[in-house]
Length: 298
Image (cartoon, rainbow, N blue to C red):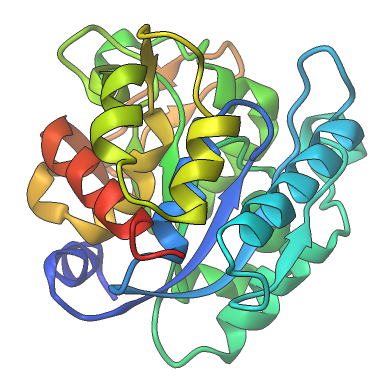
């Protein structure tokens, strides 16, 4: 499929095959994005894969925590068994000699599932893109079988790429950007008029409006995955599944995929393969759709 055909498919009503990839334990919005996928009637969720991250711990600890968090969300939303979960790479491609792929269950699952599929598989990625890079290195042919929707990098206007997700494994980002894989880039950092920085709401509104159903899922999220008080919280990560579920909430452009240069700058080349770029979003539509889908869970 061309990038234009993929954008038309995203905007269509066709049910989408999805693999959700996230650093699930890193913050709390990944868990909401996972539940968004699991409760979404527009998706056939094929699997959930845990990505590495490292703050005060190693990548190996980060991916283990993320994997266990996927299992915890599935248990408390009564979706255990709906789809398999896999642990991703416990290291970064950036730390490997010659940027070799890291063998891991998540990347093998992505390769095997993509190669066996007769239709495109969409992979929302809400953290480091390590697992996708490893899968592409293991089997480059998957670039014709998947589309990656990545919350990563700063908006294009910012040039310097000091955003958290891309810097968790910068070489992995370079590999994906250079691979030719179809990608929807969802900038995770930018000025107030761009991207996921707009996805802010109050904890009180989530508690008393969005999660007002009398279900185990709503109770679990309110009691375990919502800061106390009425402060604001940024729910960045629900944007990635939102692209497939409510594409009308987004404005997209098709642009040449920039180069992620070694000095952490975007370098632009009009001859490069195209990507889909998120220009603007309508946060209320995404919030309403996310929590509507979450309320489908018991």
